[in-house]
Structure formats: structure tokens, C-alpha cells
Amino acid sequence: MELDPRSLIVASVMSAALMGLVSVAFAHLRGEDRIIGTWGRAMLVLAAGLLALALRGAVADWISIALANSAIVAALVIAMHALRAFLGQRPRDALGWGLTAGLFVFLLVYSEIRPHYLPRILAVSAALILIAVRGALLLRRHAPAECRHSARFTEFIFWGVAAMTAARVVGVLLAEVQDPMASNLLNTATFLFYAGFILVTTLGVMWMEIETLQAGLVRAARIDSLTGLNNRGTFLQEFAREEARAARGGPAFSLAVFDLDRFKQVNDRYGHPAGDQVLRAFADVLRATIRPYDVVGRYGGEEFALLMPQTGKETATRIAERVRHELEGRGVTVAAKRIEVTVSAGVASYGVDGADWDALLSAADNALYVAKKAGRNRVQPAGVKSPA
Image (tube, rainbow, N blue to C red; front, side, top):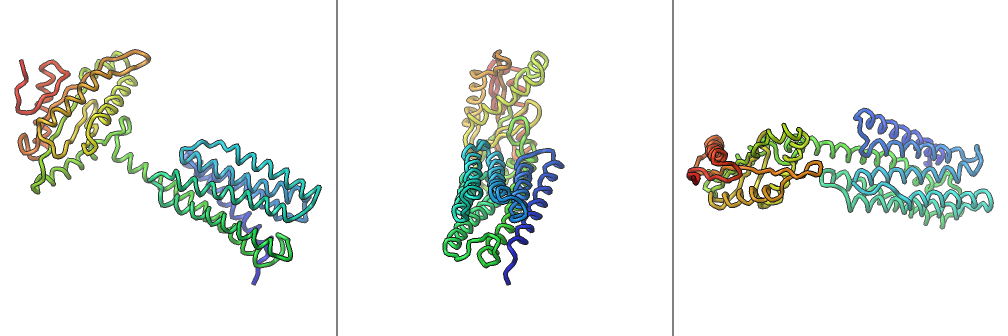
């Protein structure tokens, strides 16, 4: 049984309108338009184009042919805008909009001046294939890790659109009757596929949005929002794993606790935004100075902790000293003015200064206190007397 293509187009109109309204509403409720809001607007434009296409014979040809097909292509260009913005690419698309404008003029010529179906179907199909391939390649090359599965799913759909459209071109070239509204297997399969495309791609985009939101929630639970370092809870989890390895006979490790010197004076003199900038700057120093397998976290306020696996106290002290020296040399620039910032640290080693978190932290804190008392801007290993 063959379905009427016009009925399938009307079903596509309803599907696109529904997906568009749901997407726009979802973005509005979230108060943020990452991808789904713009995608929803694209679906509404697509619904308008499909509606004009379904009115073939009831309205002027330039509306049901030139305007309708150009609106469909424009909807896909807007959808690509949403994808590019979501993936961190330049959202502007001169090629897409130029293609849409050129297609409109081309369709006007071959619907009003020199009416001919074949050039129109070839031009529209070429535009759809180009945009679908661009969308698939965009997702393949730039999909972030947190939504890799949903992006790959959506990518395959775009490849499917390109393949289906190419198959339709071949079918049209071989068909005896070239009428998009004729009830035949080719038209039925094409419009049925496009109706499914609207639903499935919107679900894929929503999946991408949801996966990204989930990754953001996980990140917010594990990462300090100001510095981008591990928060206290995450750092303690890493410490527990390293402690378990050491307890099973693995290599020892060391802990360094850093505290920015006279940080309260920075806040009082320059303001809390400047203090936040100092914290971020020190976090950058830590990231740039420590080894790839070290673990660093913001322990609280202006205090930071550094976990150094497979590292004895002497090596750990040198690493902490390197951090101290880097911050001292770099300083922090606030409002075009350089602020001299220093840090003090205490270093303790597992099995020597303690065998659990409380004992090791206490030893590192005591060493930090000695460093502060001795004049600040220094690294003090636990169990070693500070030089007079």
C-alpha cells in the first residue's frame, strides 16, 4: 500500500511544529539556549516550508516551489548554526545562506520563467546533500567527549539523509513520471524518511543537550568552580585511592599543603574580585608546574593540596619549591598593576609522617605553620627543623 505523499508532508509539518515548540519551550524553561532553542526555531521554519510545499496547486507556484524549498534549506542552515554554536565553532555560515539565496533565485527561474521539474529536484537535492554532509562532518570532527555517543547517533542520521536524498535523485532520473506529489514508492519512501528524520534528529539533539548537562553536573560536583581544580571531596577520594595502594604494599606518596601568604590583605586592599584572580592565577601555576600524574585540589579558602604519587619527601619538597618559585616570579596583574604574591607550603610523606589522611594532613599543616612562622614564602618538610 502506497501512502499519499501530500499526507506524509502534512504529517511532517505536524512533527516539525511539535518538535520545534517542545524544543523552544525546553530552552525557555532552562533559561539557556545552548543548542535546543535554536534547533527548535529551525524546526518551526521547516514546518512553515513543508506547509507551503503541501499546498502545491492551491497557492502560486513560486510559493509552493521556490519559497517552500528555500525555507526548508534555510531551516537546515539554522540547524547547522545551532550545531556549530554548540560545538564551539563559528556560527556564521555565509556559504549556507548564500546557497539558500541562490537556490531561491534558481527555483524562481525554473518555476516561473522556464518551468521544469528536473533542474529543481536536482538543485534542491544537491543543497540538502551538501548541508547533511557538512552536518555529519561537523559532528564527527568536533563532538565533545561528554556527548560523544549522542553526537555519533546524530551524525549517522545526517549521513542517512545524504544517502536517501542521493537515492531519490537516482530514482527521479530513472522514473517515467517526475511529479513529487505522485503516489509511487519513491515519493512515499522519501517523504516517510524525511518525516522520521525530523523526529529522530531532534531526539538526537536533545540527547546531546542532556548528555552535556549531565557532564556539567558531574563536573560541578567534582571541580571547584573558581579555580577549575579538584574540590575537597574529589581530592579526598584521590587520596583514599592512593592510600589504599600504599597500604597494599605499593610505593609511598607525599602530600603538600599550600597557603597563599597574606591573602586577607590582598582582599582588603584590592577587593575580593582581585582575590579571586589571585586564586585562579595560583591554580594556573599549579597546573603548569606539577607532573601529569600528580593530583591537586583546592582544599579550602586560599589553601591548596597536592598529592604526589610514588614520591618521597625530598623529591616532593623540590616539586613544592618549584611551585613556590614559579608563583613568586610570575606575580599577578590586576587592573594593569602587578601584585606580588607568594605562597608557603608544608610537605609530609606517607609512612614517615603519618599513615592516614588525618595524620598526614596534621604533619603537613604543622610544617606549613613552621614555614609561616619562619617568614613565609618558603617550603617546609615535616620533621625537619626550619633554618634560623
